[in-house]
Length: 391
Ligand code: PHE
Picture 1 (spheres, rainbow, N blue to C red):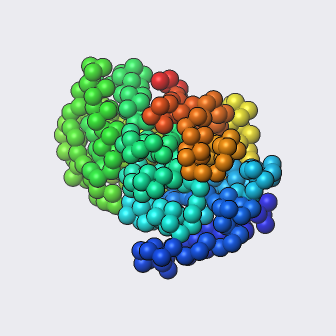
Picture 2: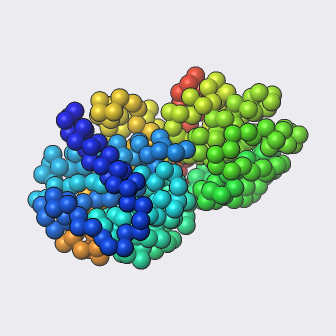
Picture 3: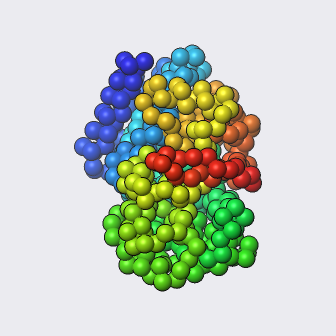
Protein backbone atom coordinates (compact mmCIF):
# COMPACT_ATOMS: atom_id res chain seq x y z
CA UNK A 1 0.00 0.00 0.00
CA UNK A 2 2.77 2.40 0.94
CA UNK A 3 4.59 1.85 -2.36
CA UNK A 4 1.38 2.42 -4.28
CA UNK A 5 0.62 5.68 -2.52
CA UNK A 6 4.13 6.95 -2.99
CA UNK A 7 4.00 6.22 -6.71
CA UNK A 8 0.61 7.86 -7.03
CA UNK A 9 1.76 10.92 -5.17
CA UNK A 10 4.81 11.15 -7.40
CA UNK A 11 2.55 11.19 -10.47
CA UNK A 12 0.40 13.88 -8.88
CA UNK A 13 3.42 15.97 -8.00
CA UNK A 14 4.81 15.58 -11.50
CA UNK A 15 1.52 16.80 -12.88
CA UNK A 16 1.60 19.82 -10.57
CA UNK A 17 5.18 20.47 -11.57
CA UNK A 18 4.24 20.36 -15.26
CA UNK A 19 1.45 22.79 -14.69
CA UNK A 20 3.73 25.38 -13.12
CA UNK A 21 6.20 25.20 -15.99
CA UNK A 22 3.71 25.32 -18.83
CA UNK A 23 2.23 28.73 -18.14
CA UNK A 24 1.95 29.34 -21.89
CA UNK A 25 -1.40 28.49 -23.49
CA UNK A 26 -1.59 24.90 -24.65
CA UNK A 27 -1.64 25.85 -28.35
CA UNK A 28 0.50 22.96 -29.53
CA UNK A 29 -0.64 19.97 -27.50
CA UNK A 30 2.37 18.01 -26.32
CA UNK A 31 2.14 14.26 -26.93
CA UNK A 32 0.92 12.46 -23.83
CA UNK A 33 3.46 10.02 -22.40
CA UNK A 34 2.97 6.64 -24.07
CA UNK A 35 2.11 4.91 -20.80
CA UNK A 36 -0.79 7.30 -20.22
CA UNK A 37 -2.26 7.42 -23.74
CA UNK A 38 -5.99 6.57 -23.69
CA UNK A 39 -5.62 4.26 -26.66
CA UNK A 40 -2.95 2.16 -24.94
CA UNK A 41 -3.40 -0.21 -22.04
CA UNK A 42 -4.39 2.54 -19.61
CA UNK A 43 -7.37 4.85 -19.27
CA UNK A 44 -6.53 8.38 -18.12
CA UNK A 45 -8.90 10.30 -15.86
CA UNK A 46 -8.22 14.00 -15.17
CA UNK A 47 -8.66 15.77 -11.85
CA UNK A 48 -8.72 19.48 -11.01
CA UNK A 49 -8.68 20.46 -7.34
CA UNK A 50 -7.44 23.11 -4.92
CA UNK A 51 -4.32 21.48 -3.48
CA UNK A 52 -2.95 24.83 -2.30
CA UNK A 53 -4.54 28.18 -1.36
CA UNK A 54 -7.49 29.03 0.87
CA UNK A 55 -9.42 25.83 0.07
CA UNK A 56 -6.47 23.40 0.07
CA UNK A 57 -8.04 20.90 2.45
CA UNK A 58 -10.95 20.46 -0.01
CA UNK A 59 -8.62 19.36 -2.79
CA UNK A 60 -6.38 17.15 -0.72
CA UNK A 61 -9.33 15.19 0.69
CA UNK A 62 -10.90 14.87 -2.76
CA UNK A 63 -7.70 13.58 -4.32
CA UNK A 64 -7.33 10.99 -1.55
CA UNK A 65 -10.89 9.72 -2.05
CA UNK A 66 -10.36 9.32 -5.80
CA UNK A 67 -7.06 7.50 -5.36
CA UNK A 68 -8.74 5.02 -3.05
CA UNK A 69 -11.45 4.27 -5.61
CA UNK A 70 -8.99 3.98 -8.51
CA UNK A 71 -6.70 1.72 -6.54
CA UNK A 72 -9.61 -0.59 -5.69
CA UNK A 73 -10.76 -0.66 -9.33
CA UNK A 74 -7.28 -1.52 -10.57
CA UNK A 75 -6.88 -4.23 -7.94
CA UNK A 76 -10.16 -5.70 -9.23
CA UNK A 77 -8.84 -5.91 -12.81
CA UNK A 78 -9.23 -2.34 -14.07
CA UNK A 79 -11.69 -1.29 -16.78
CA UNK A 80 -12.07 -3.18 -20.07
CA UNK A 81 -8.74 -4.87 -19.36
CA UNK A 82 -6.98 -1.50 -18.93
CA UNK A 83 -5.44 0.10 -15.87
CA UNK A 84 -7.00 3.38 -14.72
CA UNK A 85 -4.53 6.24 -14.24
CA UNK A 86 -5.18 9.75 -12.92
CA UNK A 87 -3.58 13.07 -13.66
CA UNK A 88 -4.14 15.77 -11.03
CA UNK A 89 -3.72 19.52 -11.49
CA UNK A 90 -3.73 22.06 -8.68
CA UNK A 91 -5.83 25.16 -9.40
CA UNK A 92 -4.59 27.01 -6.29
CA UNK A 93 -8.25 27.64 -5.31
CA UNK A 94 -8.65 29.99 -8.32
CA UNK A 95 -11.32 29.73 -11.08
CA UNK A 96 -8.94 30.95 -13.85
CA UNK A 97 -6.47 28.21 -12.93
CA UNK A 98 -9.27 25.64 -12.82
CA UNK A 99 -10.20 26.60 -16.40
CA UNK A 100 -6.54 26.47 -17.55
CA UNK A 101 -6.03 23.06 -15.96
CA UNK A 102 -9.17 21.74 -17.68
CA UNK A 103 -7.91 23.01 -21.04
CA UNK A 104 -4.65 21.17 -20.45
CA UNK A 105 -6.42 17.92 -19.52
CA UNK A 106 -8.56 18.13 -22.66
CA UNK A 107 -6.04 19.32 -25.26
CA UNK A 108 -2.78 17.97 -23.99
CA UNK A 109 -3.48 14.92 -21.82
CA UNK A 110 -6.54 13.68 -23.77
CA UNK A 111 -8.33 12.39 -20.68
CA UNK A 112 -11.57 10.41 -21.08
CA UNK A 113 -13.34 12.32 -18.32
CA UNK A 114 -12.65 14.87 -15.60
CA UNK A 115 -13.40 14.87 -11.87
CA UNK A 116 -13.56 18.23 -10.03
CA UNK A 117 -13.90 20.77 -8.50
CA UNK A 118 -15.22 21.40 -5.00
CA UNK A 119 -15.99 25.14 -4.94
CA UNK A 120 -18.91 25.82 -7.29
CA UNK A 121 -17.28 28.90 -8.84
CA UNK A 122 -14.29 26.75 -9.86
CA UNK A 123 -16.51 23.96 -11.21
CA UNK A 124 -18.44 26.46 -13.36
CA UNK A 125 -15.11 27.66 -14.81
CA UNK A 126 -14.16 24.03 -15.57
CA UNK A 127 -17.55 23.16 -17.04
CA UNK A 128 -17.27 26.07 -19.47
CA UNK A 129 -14.21 24.31 -20.93
CA UNK A 130 -15.33 20.66 -20.65
CA UNK A 131 -18.80 21.15 -22.17
CA UNK A 132 -17.78 22.63 -25.54
CA UNK A 133 -15.03 19.99 -25.79
CA UNK A 134 -17.58 17.23 -25.04
CA UNK A 135 -15.47 15.76 -22.27
CA UNK A 136 -17.66 14.40 -19.47
CA UNK A 137 -17.11 16.07 -16.10
CA UNK A 138 -18.38 14.97 -12.70
CA UNK A 139 -18.14 17.27 -9.70
CA UNK A 140 -18.24 15.34 -6.43
CA UNK A 141 -19.33 18.23 -4.20
CA UNK A 142 -20.25 21.45 -6.02
CA UNK A 143 -23.80 22.23 -5.01
CA UNK A 144 -24.69 25.42 -6.90
CA UNK A 145 -27.38 24.70 -9.57
CA UNK A 146 -25.47 26.61 -12.27
CA UNK A 147 -22.69 23.98 -12.45
CA UNK A 148 -24.68 21.26 -14.25
CA UNK A 149 -26.75 23.83 -16.14
CA UNK A 150 -23.65 24.52 -18.26
CA UNK A 151 -24.57 21.51 -20.37
CA UNK A 152 -25.27 17.83 -20.93
CA UNK A 153 -21.68 16.64 -20.31
CA UNK A 154 -21.63 18.02 -16.74
CA UNK A 155 -22.76 15.88 -13.78
CA UNK A 156 -22.67 15.90 -9.98
CA UNK A 157 -23.11 13.18 -7.35
CA UNK A 158 -24.34 15.49 -4.55
CA UNK A 159 -27.55 17.40 -3.79
CA UNK A 160 -27.98 21.02 -4.90
CA UNK A 161 -28.26 24.24 -2.86
CA UNK A 162 -31.99 24.87 -3.30
CA UNK A 163 -32.30 21.77 -1.10
CA UNK A 164 -29.36 22.55 1.20
CA UNK A 165 -30.66 26.09 1.89
CA UNK A 166 -34.08 24.68 2.71
CA UNK A 167 -32.50 22.17 5.13
CA UNK A 168 -30.90 24.84 7.32
CA UNK A 169 -33.98 27.10 7.17
CA UNK A 170 -36.14 24.19 8.34
CA UNK A 171 -33.68 23.22 11.06
CA UNK A 172 -33.46 26.85 12.26
CA UNK A 173 -37.27 27.17 12.47
CA UNK A 174 -38.39 23.68 13.53
CA UNK A 175 -35.51 22.42 15.68
CA UNK A 176 -33.87 25.58 17.02
CA UNK A 177 -37.14 27.63 17.04
CA UNK A 178 -35.35 30.74 15.78
CA UNK A 179 -37.20 33.89 14.67
CA UNK A 180 -34.53 36.39 13.66
CA UNK A 181 -31.42 35.47 11.67
CA UNK A 182 -28.62 37.66 10.27
CA UNK A 183 -26.65 36.60 7.18
CA UNK A 184 -22.94 37.09 6.51
CA UNK A 185 -22.00 35.94 3.02
CA UNK A 186 -19.05 35.79 0.61
CA UNK A 187 -19.78 38.42 -2.06
CA UNK A 188 -18.12 36.76 -5.08
CA UNK A 189 -18.84 33.09 -4.41
CA UNK A 190 -21.63 31.49 -6.45
CA UNK A 191 -22.05 28.99 -3.63
CA UNK A 192 -22.46 31.61 -0.91
CA UNK A 193 -24.76 33.82 -2.99
CA UNK A 194 -26.96 30.88 -4.01
CA UNK A 195 -27.31 29.52 -0.49
CA UNK A 196 -28.09 32.98 0.90
CA UNK A 197 -30.92 33.41 -1.60
CA UNK A 198 -32.53 30.05 -0.85
CA UNK A 199 -32.09 30.27 2.92
CA UNK A 200 -33.57 33.78 2.97
CA UNK A 201 -36.58 32.77 0.88
CA UNK A 202 -37.31 29.57 2.80
CA UNK A 203 -36.72 30.99 6.28
CA UNK A 204 -39.03 33.92 5.48
CA UNK A 205 -41.70 31.59 4.03
CA UNK A 206 -41.56 29.59 7.25
CA UNK A 207 -42.34 32.75 9.25
CA UNK A 208 -38.80 33.80 10.22
CA UNK A 209 -37.21 37.18 9.61
CA UNK A 210 -33.79 38.12 8.16
CA UNK A 211 -32.69 41.10 10.27
CA UNK A 212 -29.33 41.96 8.68
CA UNK A 213 -27.28 40.99 5.60
CA UNK A 214 -23.54 41.66 5.54
CA UNK A 215 -20.86 40.60 3.04
CA UNK A 216 -17.14 39.78 2.92
CA UNK A 217 -14.59 38.79 0.28
CA UNK A 218 -12.68 35.52 0.16
CA UNK A 219 -9.33 35.97 1.90
CA UNK A 220 -10.56 38.71 4.29
CA UNK A 221 -9.39 38.35 7.87
CA UNK A 222 -11.19 41.14 9.70
CA UNK A 223 -14.95 40.74 10.01
CA UNK A 224 -15.45 42.98 13.07
CA UNK A 225 -17.23 45.76 11.17
CA UNK A 226 -19.84 43.36 9.75
CA UNK A 227 -20.21 41.52 13.05
CA UNK A 228 -20.71 44.78 14.94
CA UNK A 229 -23.50 45.75 12.52
CA UNK A 230 -25.03 42.29 12.99
CA UNK A 231 -24.83 42.62 16.78
CA UNK A 232 -26.89 45.84 16.58
CA UNK A 233 -29.62 43.91 14.75
CA UNK A 234 -29.83 41.48 17.73
CA UNK A 235 -30.37 38.23 15.77
CA UNK A 236 -31.06 34.81 17.32
CA UNK A 237 -28.41 33.30 15.01
CA UNK A 238 -26.08 34.17 12.11
CA UNK A 239 -26.13 32.22 8.83
CA UNK A 240 -22.64 32.09 7.28
CA UNK A 241 -22.73 30.08 4.03
CA UNK A 242 -18.97 30.27 3.42
CA UNK A 243 -15.84 28.12 3.43
CA UNK A 244 -13.95 26.99 6.54
CA UNK A 245 -11.03 29.38 6.02
CA UNK A 246 -13.16 32.45 6.75
CA UNK A 247 -15.80 30.77 8.94
CA UNK A 248 -13.28 29.80 11.64
CA UNK A 249 -12.08 33.40 11.93
CA UNK A 250 -15.64 34.78 11.85
CA UNK A 251 -16.63 32.52 14.76
CA UNK A 252 -13.61 33.65 16.77
CA UNK A 253 -14.28 37.35 16.18
CA UNK A 254 -18.01 36.95 16.89
CA UNK A 255 -17.14 35.45 20.26
CA UNK A 256 -14.64 38.23 21.01
CA UNK A 257 -17.36 40.81 20.26
CA UNK A 258 -19.72 39.08 22.69
CA UNK A 259 -22.04 37.90 19.93
CA UNK A 260 -23.12 34.76 21.77
CA UNK A 261 -25.61 33.27 19.30
CA UNK A 262 -25.38 30.08 17.24
CA UNK A 263 -23.72 30.37 13.85
CA UNK A 264 -25.27 28.26 11.07
CA UNK A 265 -23.70 27.20 7.80
CA UNK A 266 -23.46 24.69 4.97
CA UNK A 267 -21.14 22.00 3.63
CA UNK A 268 -18.39 24.58 2.99
CA UNK A 269 -17.52 24.39 6.68
CA UNK A 270 -16.40 20.79 6.35
CA UNK A 271 -12.68 20.71 7.15
CA UNK A 272 -10.52 19.63 10.07
CA UNK A 273 -9.02 23.12 9.72
CA UNK A 274 -12.28 24.66 10.98
CA UNK A 275 -11.28 23.89 14.56
CA UNK A 276 -7.67 24.95 14.05
CA UNK A 277 -8.94 28.37 12.99
CA UNK A 278 -12.02 28.73 15.16
CA UNK A 279 -10.89 26.81 18.26
CA UNK A 280 -13.37 26.82 21.13
CA UNK A 281 -15.31 29.63 19.40
CA UNK A 282 -16.80 26.92 17.14
CA UNK A 283 -18.65 25.36 20.08
CA UNK A 284 -22.38 24.91 19.54
CA UNK A 285 -22.55 25.97 15.88
CA UNK A 286 -24.42 23.94 13.22
CA UNK A 287 -23.94 23.18 9.53
CA UNK A 288 -25.61 21.07 6.87
CA UNK A 289 -23.53 18.43 5.14
CA UNK A 290 -23.56 15.38 2.85
CA UNK A 291 -22.87 12.61 5.34
CA UNK A 292 -21.65 11.89 8.84
CA UNK A 293 -18.65 9.63 9.47
CA UNK A 294 -20.54 8.59 12.63
CA UNK A 295 -23.26 6.93 10.52
CA UNK A 296 -23.28 3.37 11.91
CA UNK A 297 -24.12 1.71 8.56
CA UNK A 298 -21.52 -0.90 7.54
CA UNK A 299 -20.97 0.82 4.19
CA UNK A 300 -19.89 4.02 5.95
CA UNK A 301 -17.94 2.35 8.73
CA UNK A 302 -15.87 0.12 6.46
CA UNK A 303 -15.02 3.11 4.26
CA UNK A 304 -14.06 5.22 7.29
CA UNK A 305 -11.79 2.42 8.54
CA UNK A 306 -10.11 1.92 5.14
CA UNK A 307 -9.60 5.67 4.66
CA UNK A 308 -8.13 6.07 8.14
CA UNK A 309 -5.72 3.21 7.47
CA UNK A 310 -4.59 4.82 4.20
CA UNK A 311 -4.45 8.52 5.13
CA UNK A 312 -4.50 8.68 8.93
CA UNK A 313 -7.59 10.87 9.25
CA UNK A 314 -11.37 10.59 9.31
CA UNK A 315 -12.74 11.15 5.78
CA UNK A 316 -14.67 14.41 5.48
CA UNK A 317 -17.52 14.70 2.97
CA UNK A 318 -15.06 15.83 0.28
CA UNK A 319 -13.11 12.58 0.49
CA UNK A 320 -16.24 10.46 0.64
CA UNK A 321 -18.05 12.11 -2.25
CA UNK A 322 -14.89 12.14 -4.37
CA UNK A 323 -14.61 8.40 -3.73
CA UNK A 324 -18.25 8.03 -4.81
CA UNK A 325 -17.76 10.25 -7.89
CA UNK A 326 -14.80 8.15 -9.00
CA UNK A 327 -16.88 5.03 -8.37
CA UNK A 328 -19.70 6.37 -10.57
CA UNK A 329 -17.16 7.28 -13.27
CA UNK A 330 -15.49 3.86 -13.21
CA UNK A 331 -18.84 2.03 -13.24
CA UNK A 332 -19.86 4.13 -16.28
CA UNK A 333 -16.56 3.40 -18.07
CA UNK A 334 -17.21 -0.31 -17.50
CA UNK A 335 -20.81 -0.08 -18.78
CA UNK A 336 -20.07 2.13 -21.80
CA UNK A 337 -20.06 0.11 -25.05
CA UNK A 338 -16.84 1.92 -26.07
CA UNK A 339 -14.63 4.71 -24.74
CA UNK A 340 -15.93 7.48 -27.01
CA UNK A 341 -16.93 10.72 -25.29
CA UNK A 342 -20.59 10.23 -26.18
CA UNK A 343 -20.72 6.63 -24.96
CA UNK A 344 -19.10 7.61 -21.64
CA UNK A 345 -21.44 10.59 -21.25
CA UNK A 346 -24.50 8.44 -21.87
CA UNK A 347 -23.32 5.76 -19.45
CA UNK A 348 -22.82 8.35 -16.68
CA UNK A 349 -26.27 9.82 -17.38
CA UNK A 350 -27.81 6.37 -16.84
CA UNK A 351 -26.40 6.05 -13.29
CA UNK A 352 -29.13 4.50 -11.17
CA UNK A 353 -29.01 3.33 -7.54
CA UNK A 354 -25.21 3.39 -7.46
CA UNK A 355 -24.35 2.37 -3.87
CA UNK A 356 -22.31 5.41 -2.78
CA UNK A 357 -20.84 5.67 0.72
CA UNK A 358 -22.66 9.00 1.18
CA UNK A 359 -25.95 7.50 -0.04
CA UNK A 360 -27.33 5.88 -3.19
CA UNK A 361 -26.83 7.88 -6.36
CA UNK A 362 -29.41 8.19 -9.12
CA UNK A 363 -28.83 11.00 -11.60
CA UNK A 364 -31.95 12.93 -12.59
CA UNK A 365 -32.67 14.48 -16.00
CA UNK A 366 -30.71 17.58 -14.94
CA UNK A 367 -27.65 15.41 -14.13
CA UNK A 368 -27.93 16.04 -10.38
CA UNK A 369 -28.23 13.51 -7.54
CA UNK A 370 -31.17 13.74 -5.15
CA UNK A 371 -30.08 12.77 -1.64
CA UNK A 372 -30.80 13.50 2.02
CA UNK A 373 -28.68 15.99 4.00
CA UNK A 374 -27.42 15.76 7.56
CA UNK A 375 -27.16 18.54 10.13
CA UNK A 376 -23.99 18.42 12.21
CA UNK A 377 -23.02 20.27 15.40
CA UNK A 378 -19.52 21.49 16.24
CA UNK A 379 -18.78 20.54 19.81
CA UNK A 380 -15.64 19.87 21.86
CA UNK A 381 -13.36 20.17 18.83
CA UNK A 382 -15.30 17.63 16.78
CA UNK A 383 -18.42 17.35 14.69
CA UNK A 384 -21.46 15.53 16.06
CA UNK A 385 -24.38 14.10 14.07
CA UNK A 386 -27.70 15.82 14.92
CA UNK A 387 -30.32 14.84 12.35
CA UNK A 388 -31.06 13.82 8.76
CA UNK A 389 -33.42 15.87 6.56
CA UNK A 390 -34.91 14.20 3.46
CA UNK A 391 -35.68 15.91 0.16
N1 PHE B 1 -20.78 22.72 -1.90
C1 PHE B 1 -19.65 23.62 -1.93
C2 PHE B 1 -19.71 24.45 -3.21
O1 PHE B 1 -20.43 24.15 -4.08
C3 PHE B 1 -18.35 22.91 -1.84
C4 PHE B 1 -18.16 22.00 -0.65
C5 PHE B 1 -18.79 20.77 -0.59
C6 PHE B 1 -17.33 22.34 0.38
C7 PHE B 1 -18.63 19.92 0.50
C8 PHE B 1 -17.15 21.50 1.47
C9 PHE B 1 -17.83 20.29 1.52
O2 PHE B 1 -19.04 25.41 -3.39
